[in-house]
Length: 459
Image 1 (spheres, rainbow, N blue to C red):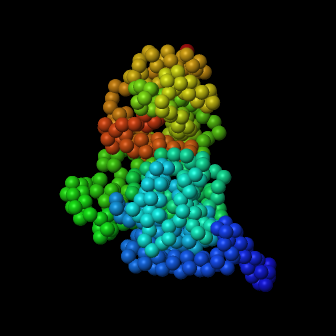
Image 2: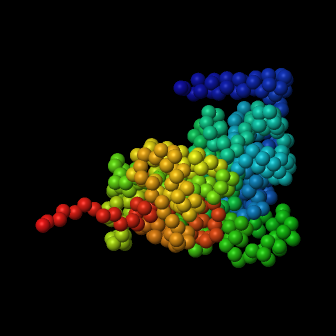
Image 3: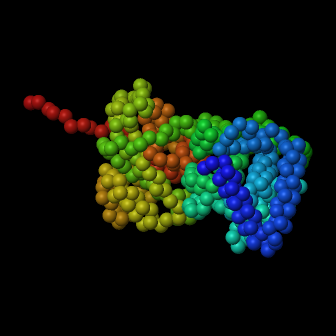
C-alpha cells in the first residue's frame, strides 16, 4: 500500500468512526468532532494531573510491555492506578472495546467501577455511563468496557478487546484459566495491553506471571500512599503486624512463602505425560460431610522420567521405583457438594478414563463405608484403602523431598492443588487441603510403596 492509499484509508476510517459516534448520540458529525476534541483535551489534562500526584509504582513502566503487574500492599493505590490507566486508554480510543475483570461481579461493580478510587469517581475526568443491563461502561466517544467475574472464565471466550484491567488477581478462584482466556481475548488494535493490580500471595500463578518476559512489574508498600490513608489505620496495623510475615505480604506488597512451608511454587514443574505408564492410580480423600470440605480426587501416574527433567541423584534407592522413574499428576477432579454416590461416581469415572490400576481411598472418614460406596459405582479396578496414622505434615514431608529432587511433574496447570500443597506444609491446622491430601496419597502409592518385582528362582 503506497503512502497516498494509506492516508486515504486512514481518513476514511476516521470519517466512518465519526459518523458512527454521531449516529449513536443523534448529533451532527461536526458536533461529534468538537465533543471528541474537548474530551481529548480533558483527558490530557486529567492524565497530567494524575501523573503529578501518583507515586512511581502507580504509573505505567517506561519500557515496552504487554502486561503491567502492579503488586502492592493494602491501600498502596492499586485501584486508582488501574482505573486511571483504563479510563485514559478508553478516552483516547473512540469505539474501543475493553475488559474489567475482578474476583467477583460484586467486586467489579463496587471496587473497580463505583469504589472511592473506581472509574466513576476519578477526579478531573468525565465519568462514563454504566449500563447495568449489559454490564458495561460507555464513554461519550463510543468506547466501552465490559465487566467479567473470575468465577466465570468461559465468559471471556468469544469477545475481543484492545486492553484490560484485572484486579486482585491473587484471590481469583481460577487464576490460570481466567488469565489464559483473557489473554486470548486481547486481540484488537495495534497494541493490546493488560494491567494486573493485586496484593500478592505466594501462589504459583503470580510467580509464573512475574517470570514472563513481556511482564513488567512495579511494587509499592502501603506507606507510599500514606498521604491518602487514615493515620490511625497505619498506626494500628503497624503496631499489630509490624515485622511479621503478614505485614510483609499485606503492607509491603511482597511475595512471602509461608513459614515452614514444605512446598514452594518453583517445585511445581510442568511436563508432558509420557507415552506409557507403569501404573496409574486415582486417589480419593472423602469429605467429612456434603456441605463441608471438598472431595479430593487426584489422578497420578508412574512412568519414565522425561529427558533432562530432574537428576534423581539423592533418590532413596531402598524405597519406591527405580531412579529413572517419575510421578506425574494427570488430573485434579476434586469437587464440592457431592453426595457419597456422587463423589464415588466421579472417582470411578476418572479411573475408567485413565485406565487406572487402583483407586486409593483414605478410610479415616468412613472406614468400610468408603469401600462400599465406591463399589456401588462399579469400579474398573482394585480399591485400596489407606489409613492416616500420621499427621498431614509427616505424610507430606517425603513427597515434598521428591518434588525438590525433580521426581514429580504436573501435566497441566493445577493452581488450586498447588496452592493447597503450599498451605499444607506450612500450617498443621490448614483447612481445605482435600486436593493436597488426595495428591499425597496418590504420590505415596506410586513413589514410596515398595512393590515386589518378578524374580526367577533356580532349583
